[in-house]
Length: 336
Image 1 (cartoon, helix red, strand yellow):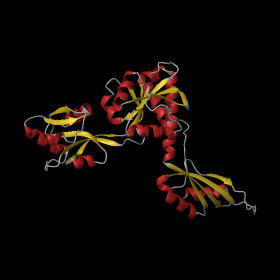
Image 2 (tube, helix red, strand yellow):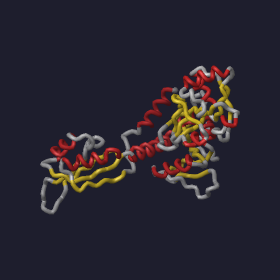
Image 3 (cartoon, rainbow, N blue to C red):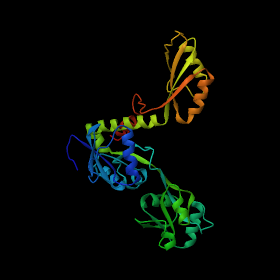
Image 4 (tube, rainbow, N blue to C red):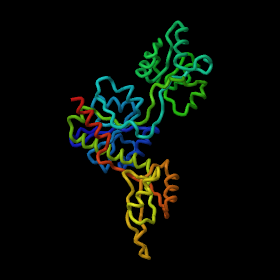
């Protein structure tokens, strides 16, 4: 691990889908990780030479950022919430990186026909005349959730497969990560209504003390958030170009603003089209629309005279100030 004062450190998951998606996100943001030897646990991002990349297990990333041995980390909100501690040393910079979606939830055997929600679980647990045995890898979050409903319980720590715990008999129910739910069904378990403890996806975190006292880390935080926010915003939008007749740019803009979806970010960009017949009434229209609105946007453009419609993906949409960077500065200031 580098101790160079001219560098800061970002930990990424070392293996699995979360690792692959983290590298893909950074690459899509223009921050491709260069790792010449796949067995190395250190790498670099040429676009950010001051940033050293380390590879750790998802849970260890949280601990490393928490104790300050690593400055930044990308991992799941599930392990962040479980292991961040109570001292506020971890600051979540971005909690919606768009991958690693799952939920931490309670699941009971399908044979428990009268237990369908948390209230029913409480009644069932009270009738047991002993603590409810719950197998989980998330004792902090699970215990806190059960305590909210005054359900007497014993947490059973497990590192392997949890879904077999009720059938084997060493636990009554489980608290585990659920995505599609197929694994639960395969093991004759079902999630409880109201039993979702935490909705999770990948997040970017930082050590609060490092950001407060290390100007280089603060600069890197801004760069990371600039690239990530601009890319994620762009990935949800498309650029549309079309030609349109009109007596003036203002007249075309009025027709556009009368539609529902083609107003653009602040408004359309209009420029004169130089055509062979020297018709002064042709203009090029450039707008940004959300991907989900594409079909309606094209229809609206056609309805007001748009032709030659071209649609292109976007790489970045930069704001005047990245909102999450501004939020980070406010959080740091509030803690002083």
